[in-house]
Amino acid sequence: MSGRWYGPGVVAVVVLATAGACGTPSERRDGVTAQLTRFERALDAGQRQRLCAALAPSTREELEQSAKRRCAQAIGEQSLPAAGAVRRVDVYGEQARVVLDHDTVFLAHFPTGWKVTAAGCRPRPQRPYQCEIKAG
Image 1 (spheres, rainbow, N blue to C red):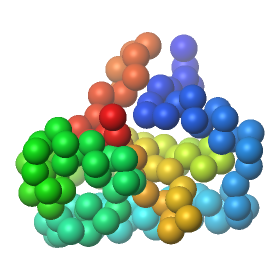
Image 2 (cartoon, helix red, strand yellow):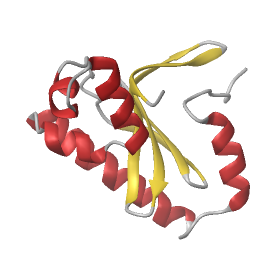
Image 3 (cartoon, rainbow, N blue to C red):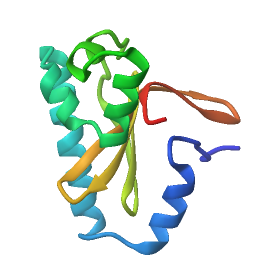
């Protein structure tokens, strides 16, 4: 089925998309892209604290619980790919998916801005994405 994707919080995407979001579609897309750029720069520079700050609270919590380490240590142990260029940005209300050359990243909008809910995600036909970092 072309065009269908499954990712973290897909039910929330449907619910939140109908609830609306602040800003125009262009402003929301720009916010997503800006946050993704900060996340990728922190990843490239090995800035673990900035990577952790970019994560959604539940994603950070899951990472720490799974690794039994603080986020800054745990995130350095993840196999996040060098993402490459942005191929597509989809914003659905308060949720977003960014497809890159070598990664797919999911984000959600919080009062403090866009946060990464899942990263290091690979699509799987007819199944949810497989992600290195995600909420539980």
